Image (cartoon, rainbow, N blue to C red):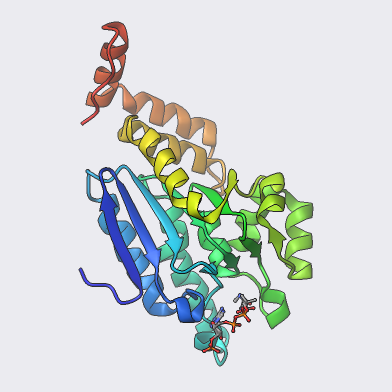
Amino acid sequence: MNFENIIVSQQENTALITINRPTKLNALNKKTIEELHFAFKMLDENSSVKAIIVTGSGEKAFVAGADISEFANFNIEEGTELARKGQKILFDFVQNLGTPVIAAINGFALGGGLELAMAAHFRVASTNAKMGLPEVSLGVIPGYGGTQRLPQLVGKGKAMELIMTAGMISAEEAKNWGLVNYVVEQEELLPLCEKLASKIARNSSVAIAAAIKAINANYTNCVNGFAVEIEQFGLIFDTVDFKEGTTAFLEKRKPNFE
Ligand code: COA
């Protein structure tokens, strides 16, 4: 499939999605959100892809937010639909993807950009990265899950402050807050993400998808995470990967997960 605003590539078991609107600091317009949905779906359905890295093109921005020019004249219905559809096809979609998604934050991750990074399963940032949810400075609020995922990741007080002040934090602060797992020089960003992806690829992707479901259950309304864990744990016993993983251990060899 040909994309206009993103570039998709694959090296061994790792796919890379690069959001490619550098002149607009990779801002998420409608088309980019739709393309991202198709790309994540396509890669998730490709069994040779064991992990996905998402990043921004250029050295300045991961994503500088939702494209302000597209929603500046929206009314209540259009605004509601923008958030509802975006959450459904991209942000919730990424969070619930069975294939692990790593956000490689290579610069500004603001508004929808930080929201996309927070929907990913974990985040790595380059030293120049700056993160924030500046929506209230535009008279709007985060609408792609930011008011929910930021408190989950950093705690309610810090989330309240970042959202209310519309401030930006540095990569190092984000690491201290637990928002990103690592901070590295920009040239080290993709190599580190690729290294993490290749570590992930050695494990059972069936078990990883089950673990993602169980972990996410804790953050889903009216769902008991412990019950989901028990259910996912039980289902694993009927998988080829479980047989291979445990047999390999007992035979003192490395597992070969297909
Ligand atoms: N939506 C639409 N266009 C955006 C954008 C966004 N969220 N963020 C940046 N752009 C565009 C700018 O309009 C500019 O386009 P132009 O050259 O056609 O005028 C281009 O990207 C470069 O941005 P610019 O503002 O000139 O870069 P800068 O280095 O001076 O500032 C930022 C960088 C990130 C501080 C600034 O672009 C910014 O504040 N962006 C909006 C962030 C935001 O509020 N995001 C939340 C949206 S809900």
